[in-house]
Image (cartoon, rainbow, N blue to C red; front, side, top):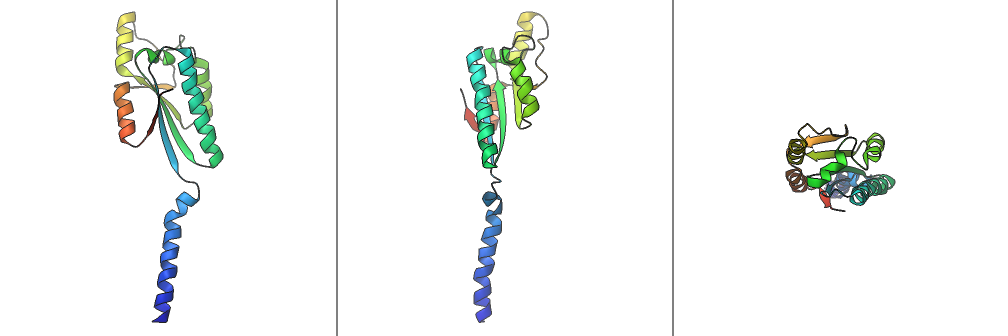
Length: 149
């Protein structure tokens, strides 16, 4: 009977250590959505700076982070091929950061294309989503943090 009383606390302690193992090993994962809705190069660069700084911070801590830049309205110009003031930065960061993604609002793209009378080409790094604002809502509902630089 004495062994039972010794084994149970040891078993409980080991169970707690195994349950906390991923947290102790720095396995925490962060997710952040960065919102761009202005056709302002300074704002676009700030969003990309935020992404780089967040990535650098969590990489140094040994923690994972997923980053998604969502652009809609006038901010969609951030992803317009040949027009974006941050096109080269997006290309470079897309190659350097596998945890970074770019979402372009399908509504804004459709409106911009209709106004131009042709299909507006987006940078290859950007993926069309049906709605930028809905994408931000869905990410937040899934527990993502939200940043608007």
